[in-house]
Image (cartoon, rainbow, N blue to C red; front, side, top):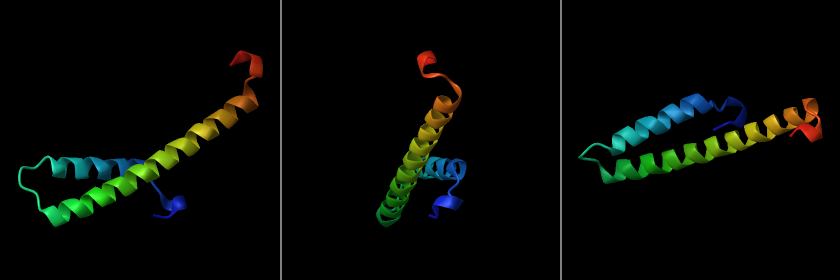
Length: 70
């Protein structure tokens, strides 16, 4: 997944779909392994994106709010 093309909302929606799939009663083991791996990949990408967003918020805050206010 290309960093510039990564869409957090779409990734989260795909994770939700994978989660719903696992809630079915009858699941195929091979498909489950593929979906699990894809889910983990998406979760890691989302974590990375959230961390970058958090860092950006901190940079913005430092730029516009004096240190003694936070």
